[in-house]
Image (cartoon, rainbow, N blue to C red; front, side, top):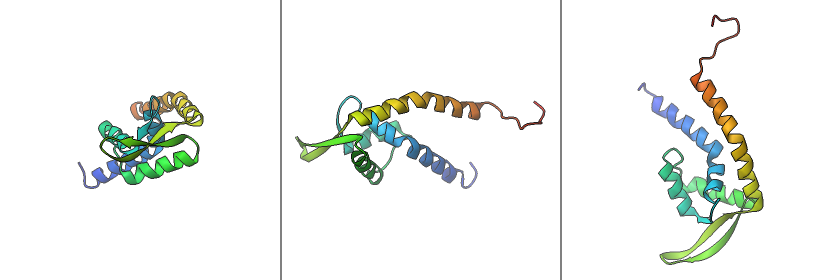
Length: 124
């Protein structure tokens, strides 16, 4: 690995994560409400989507302001009450739309990454 390659890879991963994190968080709430730390652990388990509280909690606040999620407080057996986040109808619609668009987007990117691109006028 060349010097600076790790930094470049980290930057590329951060940009990809930024683009899809919102929809991955919404997807984690598809079947049931989740609390913040639970979301963080699920993202960490994925490896590529691991992030920090400083990223997830502002994202959750924005999702709430945008009416994509709603919150409720629930008592916890192991500590203070937890704020649970659940999809709203608007949030479910946004997730459904992303789910429809994602395969075409993913396939288009994969095609660019796996197929040699030729310049116009260049020999094939």
